[in-house]
Length: 249
Image (tube, rainbow, N blue to C red; front, side, top):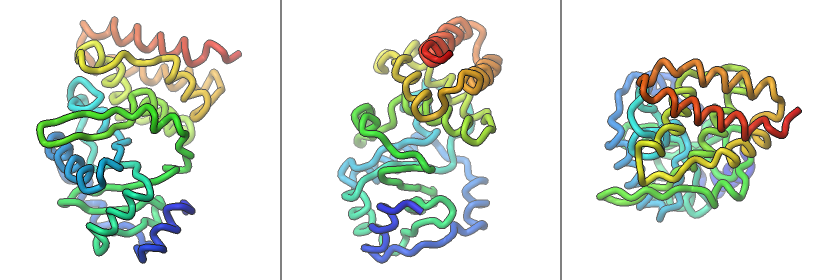
């Protein structure tokens, strides 16, 4: 269990319990609209005074870091916050909050959408300082939203697959979407491949064979993009591979 978050939950008398299996089944059957979910996150961002960062696959959507819809939109919202954010969540939603026995995160059902919050660490990963320095702020007509950087998003997806020894198709599609997005959206910065390589080596694996296996898996999903996009994708993937394994022997 996450010590800091658990202590805060105890301070605010937030209970600890398992997520209702029937609720999980319900969430899994829902089809969410990307813009509506963005609006919900913006509402939460306002309530939490911008102490909220979107970190999950939702951040790879076409309105944040991606360039088009490549898979079914995530049916949950994963967020990072801080002590102030937990305090504000408690003030606004105390009766609807609980810390999960499943993952140790703080859980809120917001307008029938599952939203989880972590601080300092998530899924066993200690969040480094530069993660917060790299967050991206996106502006919409009804407000703003903080998102994980594309470099950390790709790095964390790599970490999950390598650590679990299981490659996920949705992670491959999200990675491709994020790698290609700067070529099609002028408002997005160019991907920092050196940064991604450093994140992968430090937080996912420094074993050449594990990294190469995962990147080959990403490459195998090129049949999900348009033929004219393949050269750009291959160039990006080669850059990623070069900057990730160049110092590994």
